[in-house]
Image 1 (cartoon, rainbow, N blue to C red):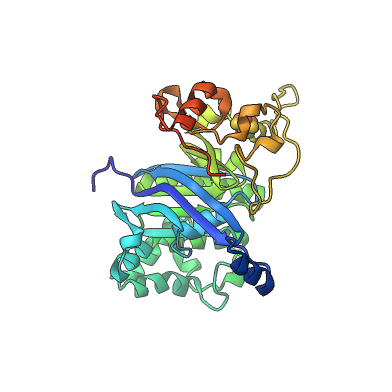
Image 2 (cartoon, rainbow, N blue to C red):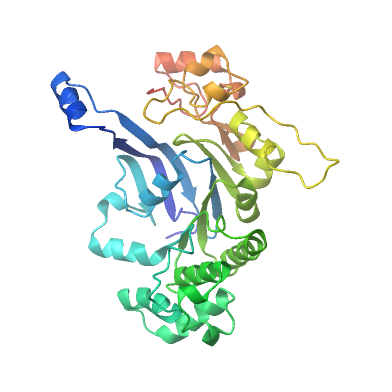
Length: 356
Ligand code: SF4
């Protein structure tokens, strides 16, 4: 595959869940011919993870990050759109493709305390994936993976059980386990959120160094913009199942465009009492994902809200294509909405009509 092609690509990816509260409500919906209520946890995401690239997804709890991760891992079937790995849609995968996918795409979980089998030593935990995938040179690979994860000397850790490791060491073992199969992509799910601050910094440095040195691509998913910005070249801001902005990390930090991004960045503490960051007001809580408002999903919390925000904003390219923002503030909404209503193209990015 060409280096200009994405390794992992999401095209309008959706994962919706039926929400039935009881057999009675399911029966009543059936009798009345009503669709069951749906949770639109992941609702039309586009993303391209290129080789050697580290991309972040940031959003608060309940925005759909976990569903996205489980869908990317193949543990949830997506309900619409496409998930493409190395040029092939996963919907066309056979058993051998899935086995190859599980070798080439590895996961680092949030919770190092529960992601390891308490009965397996470090050696056994790292040997297991090599045995499943029938990989040779097992001892050498285990040693190298531990060295890369900065667990030195490896002999000192090989026979330890998880109970004999600190939180930081456990997460390094998880990283070594992810590396032992020499993957192309790492999915990192809040990998430092359960570690203390000093350990966070060293694990972030390790992840950053590893992706540089090994050329591994990584999708880093977190609620914590400060850690995302430390390791990621680009960031996607997620709100209630959709990306509302994506941009190179530094541009986003310096000049966030979407009001939700502005509120997130305004809330990052500045470690200097003489520097005041401009804050954007964000009131209330996110809407119920089974009863989402029509139009912009952020509108009930947005201080910039306008009448037109009852129509879903389209993804609008800015900064010469470096950034996309889904907010009516940034385009000639009367023209775009008029064209959407007419079903004609506004002449820029293709319009996305509201399905809300
Ligand atoms: S589209 Fe409207 S409600 Fe939504 S973020 Fe932009 S200004 Fe706020």
